[in-house]
Length: 301
Image (tube, rainbow, N blue to C red; front, side, top):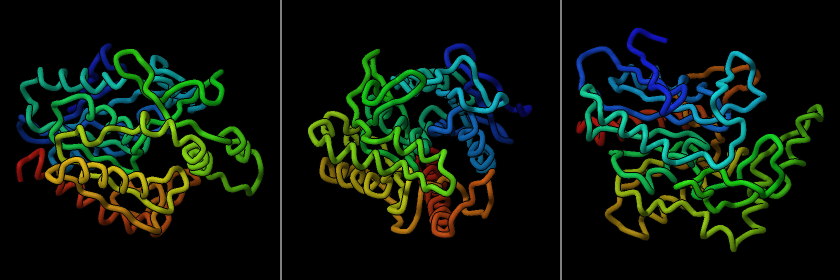
């Protein structure tokens, strides 16, 4: 924990608020990581935004049991099962109660499942000035977790009710490939298969991105093996344009890029994962575009 960081408290377990150098009130970016769980995703992004003069509110919301002990957050759910979108309303209200926060300068930055969270939440909750969804989904997907079978739970909930979702088809078989030396695991395959096999369930599961009045930035890759973020980012942009040409949307889609689009374009290796060149090249455009997007809508620059 840095000198400028505090924990939010019991209303948002493990959520943390950090401020940059200088005097407030600060524009704020709420950070939502993805299915890696814990706080790694939000803490990985926080320093980059702090360096640009933003305060950050990191919201961990899921802590799977397979995380190493040092990354476990015991009060968070181990299952990605009906995560309440209302967490974003709690976060907004907590920020608005602070004198060091620029009330009209609160943005959302979500990556992967965090992008799904950000879009589904901001389609129902007002008070955010801009939303950036990196490798996003245009629908709510099936959830998962210990003791949960296929097509049993939704990833997110609203007002205590699980949201309609698109199921997977063959996810357990795909996961079993992790035990096969040299096998290529492509999580996108059972998601694409589930969507194709259940066209009747897609309309109800679709995130109503046209209800987000604020500017939205989406970035995706057509070579994404985790899920089809390029096509889903395109769907989001088209749906907003069709609903209202005045809705402001920035769509950054890269034919050769994969899922790792949330960095700043600096080559690095994390564990056994190495960023591919196409994704790094995309990051080098996405990151400055994201900063320009937030500077305009959160700082008024």
